Image (tube, rainbow, N blue to C red; front, side):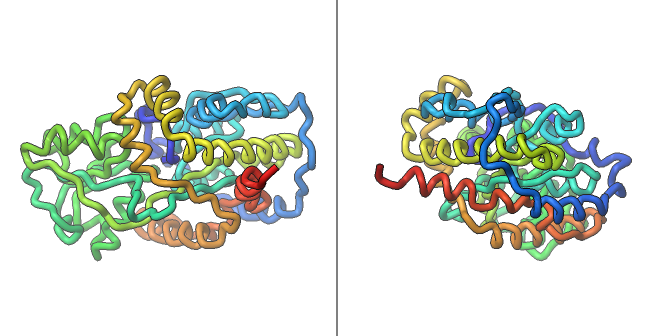
Length: 353
């Protein structure tokens, strides 16, 4: 999930998207990706250009920071984000850009959905500020990753939490055959409830659930433990057909510029973000909002995606091994025409005027 993704999403998984599509990996994806590198994005975007964006948290950030009126084109806001919802909207040709983690783009490739990652954000000190921790059910007797063998683990295929489970198992020297994976949607309080009722022994928890779960079930032995892996990728994600359109490509570039500046604004204005987003928009308490701001740490928006692509390649290789899909070059998922756009915007905003 993106760093400031909405806390409640529709209970969907990518499993339904994979049915009948698993073998529909298209070679055209790679070819089209190579061609995009030679397509110049226009310097200016026409004022009548329109794109549909699924990034509700960014919409709030742009309003709070006063940047929303600076968009030099038309934006239609869709109240969706995250892999399953964005994938379905991409397939319906009803969305041009959305926020998600890195895993949905991988599964999109395997199902023949041609997409591109156009912006990347990470967390400084990602091991100190993980997106997820492993929730441990009361009585599950799990203190370290080595204790996962034979346990029932909540699993959401096609989403960041599912990929994290496979990466955690690999770190522990285990495979999915050494545990019992229980497919559950990773939305709302599904995972904490499953842990509390002992439906599963382990589940990756994110957001306020990291705080709320031990508070509710700690007296019975419920707890969380750190997994010790990087789990911080957040992206802006687009269908290739959108970034292949010259004017939409230019609009997406301008949107990335304001998105990057809004992320920095969030980091520099925690109180306004807590009140304007977590409290007024998400309905959380200020205490929960302050916790989430502290948990997120500070953003890292790189100008060079090479390390990110290398990490993504490792994830592709692991998922391919564990799910029976074909390996592919993770670089095809990134539209590197946009590689420095966000970082340049942040640097430019920081210059004295």
